Image 1 (spheres, one colour):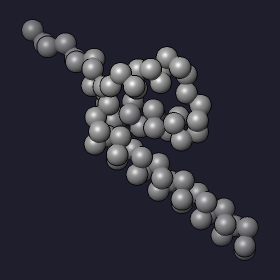
Image 2 (image 1 turned 90 degrees about the vertical axis):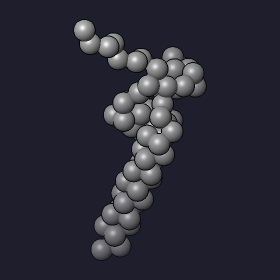
Image 3 (image 1 turned 120 degrees about the horizontal axis):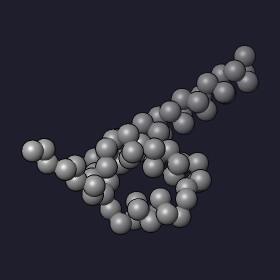
Length: 69
């Protein structure tokens, strides 16, 4: 018999989605409450935030190069 998946931990994909919505500032209250209650691995949060920040900086640099060219 298989063990049911623990619903208190989130996958990296769900954590990445939560961080992406946090960057934009558009998040439903219910989802925010789920985030506050826990269930996100701190290492996933850190990795997702670093990836999101790198993408944001990359987009800004690309726009700046396009505007100057």
